[in-house]
Image (cartoon, rainbow, N blue to C red; front, side, top):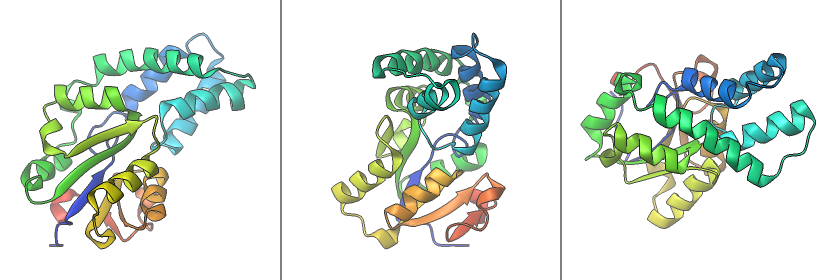
Length: 207
C-alpha cells in the first residue's frame, strides 16, 4: 500500500466519469452536416488529446481540417450546443467509474481533492452536482482556462508543497500539466501512459 497523497488534482473525463463515448456523440451532433471523414479525423484528435477543451477541438476542426476561419462567438455557440448534449447524457450515475468513486468517497476527508478538467467549467460543476459528487472536492475547475493554468493557480493560492501533490489523469495533457507545474503524475485508465510519470494506477485499490 502506498501513502495517500496530501493533495490530489483529479482529471474528470476517463478518470471519474466514463464520458468518452458521449463526448463523441456531442461532436457528431454539432458537426453532423460536415463530411464524415473530417469528423472522424476530429474524433481521432479528440481521443489523442483527452485533456484539451472542446473550444480547442472545435477551433482545430475549422482551422486545421476545414481550413476555414471561425470567430470566438461561433466557437462559443458550438460549445454551448455541445454542452446541451452533455448535460442531458452525462448525468447518468452509471457512467461514474466505481473504482475512482470508491477511493474519493473513502479519502476525501483525509486528502485535499481538486478537479482540474478540460471540460467546460459550468457544465462540469453542473454534472458534479447532479451526480452528487461535488461535496468531495475543494474546487471544481475547467475550460476555457487551460488545465495547467488551473493547477498553477491552485498551487499558488493554497501554497501547497509540490512534493505533497499528485495529478491523476488519463491523457498526455494531464501529464504535461503535472510536469509543467513540478508535481507528480499518476497515469490511470490509459495503457499508453504506463511508462510516464512516477506511478501507473492499475486500480485505485492499489493505493
